[in-house]
Amino acid sequence: MIGELDADAVVGYFRGKSILITGSTGFLGKVLVEKILRVQPDVKKLFLLIRAADIESAKHRVATEVTGREIFQVLKQKHGDKFDDFIQEKVCPLAGDIVYKNLGLDNAKLTELSKEIDIIVNGAATTNFYERYDVTFDTNVMGAKHICEFTKRCNKLKMLLHVSTAYVAGEQEGILPEKPFLLGETLREGAHLDIESELNLIKEARKEVKANCSSERVEKRTMKELGLKRAREFGWPNTYVFTKAMGEMLLGHLRGDLPTVIIRPSIEQLTSILNEPLPGWMEGIRTIDSFIIGSAKQALSIFLVDLNLIMDVRYDGVAIAAHSEDQAAQSIYHVTSSLRNPAPYAVLVDSGHRYFLHNPPRFEENGEPVRLSRMCFFQTLPRFRAYMAVKFRLPLEILRLRNIAMLGAFSRRYGDLSRKYRYVMHMAELYAPYALFKGWAALMKANKQQGKSRGYDFGFDPKSIDWDKYFYSVHIPGVIKYLCD
Ligand SMILES: NC(=O)c1ccc[n+]([C@@H]2O[C@H](COP(=O)([O-])OP(=O)(O)OC[C@H]3O[C@@H](n4cnc5c(N)ncnc54)[C@H](OP(=O)(O)O)[C@@H]3O)[C@@H](O)[C@H]2O)c1
Image (cartoon, rainbow, N blue to C red; front, side):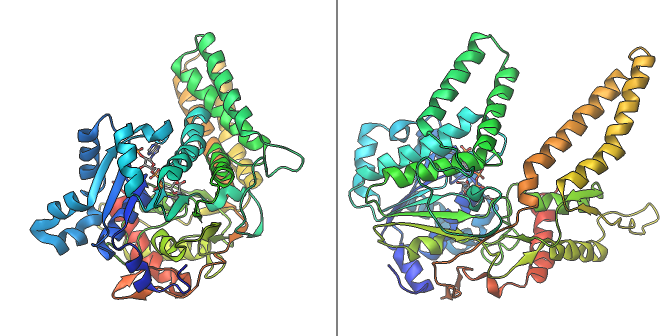
């Protein structure tokens, strides 16, 4: 183990190593691939497992969805004309899928990889909170199992790094310990979780909907609702974090003496890149970004969040990977900022208001900026529900009665508005555990010094970040540039 978080040691750690990465087409995956290639061009090889029908499609996906993305700009400038050759030499796409045993790879490939791989980073996941239970289970639970089985075949493996989420803790309050989940553990007292039974339940449910000749839409809804029901039964707020917790359990149970590191970034509140390679760059809209986009478009008047609560916004798995080298045991790291440098939501809201005052998002016909309306924040779900009931549910009910009286003249309008209302309420219920989260995920074990040297910033210590400056100058402009149409 590298005792201190020394950026030179982090960089040196990857020299000559072959790394298998899953999830490289995702947000975190491409940040990781770019960073390794940039800070350590002497890495031996990055094998990227890509969901694709064949190797040509896998290559195409890497070229368009990974190395072709804006975040590789700095690396492209660094290598100039030789960029494509560099990528060709270092990056090896593989067509595979973690839902299958042996990751869907053939025997020859498996044998070749098992002799070659030093490190495995499993970042692949189904990250949608409200996805079908079978789909999420296959990726987040069975996928973790298949990765673990493959890892055991790799005879020179130094580490399996599994990316989980800080929200496997559910809706716990206070400081969340970096503690492993034991097989069968749940967040509800007295309940016992049997992963095998969950798998059987999924198979049965699927059989039943098929037997009933249900439409695809009904099947999808049934499987989505099953996931949510099972998650809540065991104390987790949604299918995603429930299955991520089960993935951790299986990994802990099956790993034997594999050196395993589980990192738990804070979900949904991962924000844009702070410094390098591209300040403000990001992909995919997170909860807090919908607030910024709503402000930019002046299309949001209410938001469910407690402004006094702390959000978590920082992550650097590269540094963690190197820091944990050669530990035979299982290590768990929370990769978050909340305890070390709290960033209350109020800071984001104030920075946002100031930003849009200085950079008006819209103008009147006479060229004057449109006056910014202050958003209304709800700090609890019951208050939000009460507001929605008075402001929207009640008028909807009146519309329903008028529709009956007018023999269906407003059917379409009523149908439209009710669908929108149900959607907003569903999203609020789904995201409330995050917007109102009262847990403090502390990065306890790792060294808390800033890992900066030779010009590479591992951004390991959130203490150094001025949140207001970051939101005002980096994150909000990033959201406007990369996420707003
Ligand atoms: N972003 C966050 O806020 C956050 C916070 C905490 C934890 N995490 C964790 O960090 C990891 C990466 O998150 P992300 O936000 O980067 O996710 P993402 O953008 O949704 O990307 C998910 C990645 O997983 C891949 N994948 C999904 N199913 C797969 C399968 N069966 N086989 C192989 N690859 C598969 C996807 O490939 P396709 O392109 O083929 O779909 C994609 O590359 C996940 O484990 C997530 O749980 C993320």
